Image (cartoon, rainbow, N blue to C red; front, side, top):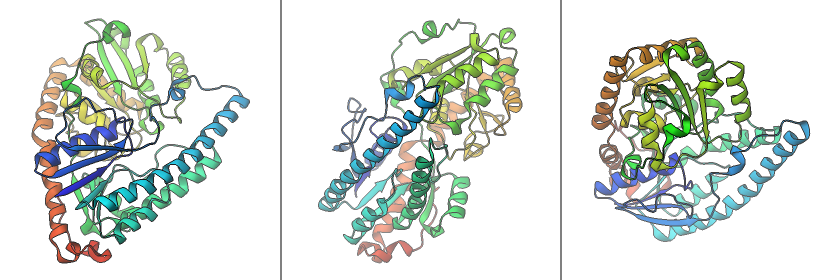
Length: 431
């Protein structure tokens, strides 16, 4: 089976996901091509599949996001204007790239085209064109709702239009893969997609952070002593990830008595004001015990970062799933997570970590304190998390399940003829 996986993000979690999925599909004897951007950051890693760097977009890691945000009215107005203007320019560029991408896919005629997340309205036009040319389309649904606030009214309008069109695109797919039963139920409640097309898969654990790990002296850089207990937040900083709640929860701990430090490491999106987070830490009196490492963490540093952590925190306000959560499991770290998205399915409460209700710093603090004060519990949870990751979240088994679904689609007569009505045929959920 010839499968083309399209991932317009050349850096970060989405392309890491695409790389691991392509590897698993290729291990299952599929002929796989990853179509991505010229900014593809994993070129130096082993590949058992073909890559096509055909999309000329932009670097998703923008230094402007880590700069101090303007405090005055004029500066804030200019920032909103600048972000809106850049978004419009990128939208026009994205359309041009989708024209090129669509023509390329039609010419290549793969058996299946597998997409990920969509970032702009109007993609339905290109998907319909692909279907008219007899191509079978499938999607891995990472997100189907906007979770962060807009910077301006214009951006809010753009977000609403984008979200509307994003919801319509799923009608074009013969199969949609979602992470977990909870997400499948919510997806079907929100979107008018036949249930037989929506299939459950797991989010696999990444091997990327092991193969090229190196020590860069993070403990010394952060001022962490060997006896310190570290609460780690790792991943992109978004409003929906609830970092202020984590700061408030940490303030409720007796950090000096526990010998605890909080490390917040990750790259901020434009909706996050890092200055406000630092100010909140100062106001809460935890500035001395809080470390902000505000940047895109290179893959080779993730291993060292994870090994510093006593517990990894996920104080999310909303989510579908989380790549960093699976990274924590892979490194054998206990987690404290809120009960959002499919977290209750992934985090075995009391076994691989602890769950707390979202937007509740006291509950979050209680869970953190329990792990920080009982070393045997933390060690056992970490071991169970690693064992679960190795047993249940293998990319090879995930890929095999997806291939079974895709093979069934291709083998059905209507789909084999690649007609527009093919997606109405019944499917079974792949678990």
